[in-house]
Amino acid sequence: MEQENLKLLEYFDKFKEYNNFDNLKKKLDKDSKIRHICDINLGDVTIPYIGPSENLKKFPKIIAKEWGEKESQEIRYILKYYDGGDIENISEAIIILEIKHQETSNENYLKLKNKLIKNEKIEDNDLEFLINERDIMSTSLVFFLI
Image 1 (cartoon, rainbow, N blue to C red):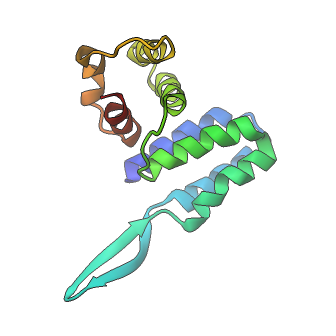
Image 2 (cartoon, helix red, strand yellow):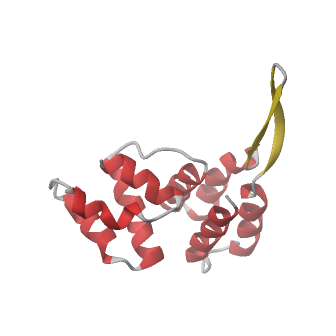
């Protein structure tokens, strides 16, 4: 998960020209770090519950006040996948494909995005490049698109 935290912070750098960026990035870094939250006891077994701070859920609202609703929505989607959420609709998938294209410059993401926009059938070979990706957003894309 540490790698995902770094990717999240790297992605957030796209907003570096925005007002109050440095303070918001520090807050995002602090709140998104994976930590031990509590132990869950099931009989004789103790399972550690780990994850980001609960404050991370409030971060998109802070972004909305600072930068506007469009940026807040983008951050909301990113945080959702960072925290293990699934893509729920085509609009979310299109945004994630655009984000992944910006992150990687891989034209395959744009091809998938255009197929979704045009409502064209996505073939197995369209998804082959995603199979080898190991980040949460790519995995979410694979499961949504199949």
